[in-house]
Image (tube, rainbow, N blue to C red; front, side, top):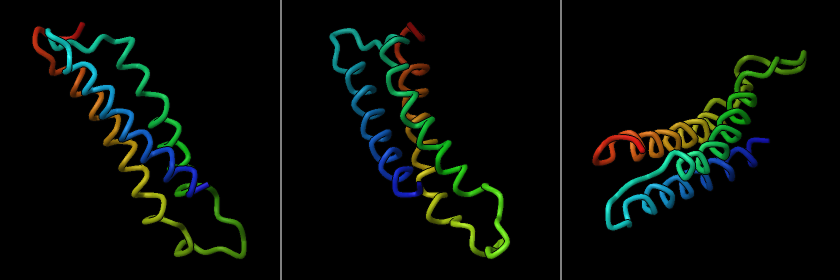
Length: 98
């Protein structure tokens, strides 16, 4: 699960960057909400997987120290970064959101 969260979060950051560049490459830079929404599901899934790996219930042979805070925390932060890239690209465009 952690490996899948890593893959999805890295793909989410790349996809969010591509979507934000696509909005900026027009003659009049504008990122429409439909285009911005294509970059939202991937980081949401990656962040959910990473958060689930960090916060899932502990089974008896495990201890609190066995939780993968670093291994699952980094993809969670990457997923949040991808969502921030899309949000800033959409909300901070010239003329306001489309």
